[in-house]
Image (cartoon, rainbow, N blue to C red; front, side):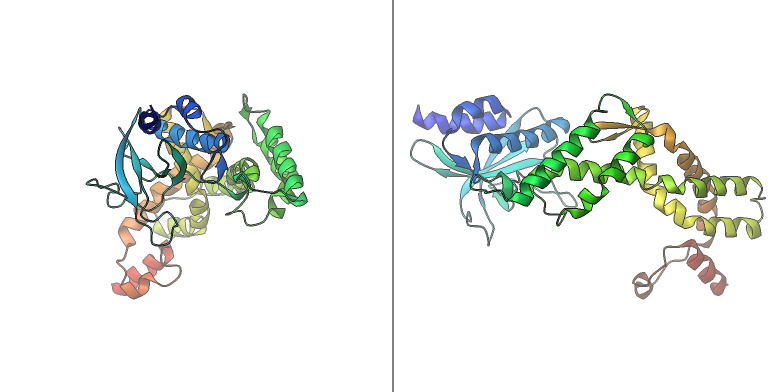
Length: 328
């Protein structure tokens, strides 16, 4: 029974069975320096993302930690490889006679006789914990205050999770919590308690920051309607004038491309749905602009030297037009 417990833990991870792991892991133990409940919650999120990649089970491949800096160097463990995606979670295990006394994420894992990574791809799906999720974390006053503010702000906008979110709603929310967002320290290393608010704020801001560009996009579309685009003397100034606007909107165009693939009528922003029709003007501008820009780009594109690659501004069409003329 004792020996089989270890096998059952590995099997439960292979089957992504959090319920079974909850029964098997020790209530009084910490895993990766976090309480069991916290550890399993994070592990379940990794499972969720693997399942989104169409993995229905994981294959345990034995190996060891190969880090030269980690205290777990040389510890044995398993890479749990998705049966569809080949993405994987790697964990090392500290053993007692009849149990695993601890489990840790491993970022530098080497599986025996199995190549985990493929060139140009990063398949590792780590189980990461923040400082405020550790069992020994002692919250300070500022942390408690900011945690509550972030929680309140997040819950306020999530009241609209079952509706189509319009810009009138989320721009007001962004303006209201601008100072809270800016007041938080290093946003690349923030406590777990802040993350729902921070990530949602930054995601919504990506859309909201484009709204002031509506007038410029409308101006561009109006101008092009009154231009004979067959004449380069008319077309080139227009394309150059609005090239920066196109560049600012290209990230949005990727969102529209995804809508075309899914057939949905809204952008998915974490757990919120943003009305895509409010951004149709930008989509129209980008489509029209790209057709005309591509015509000029194909004609004037100049291959750059290695030295020129390091200079500023060489991606712009103006540079290519100028250098193409000099080469004639």
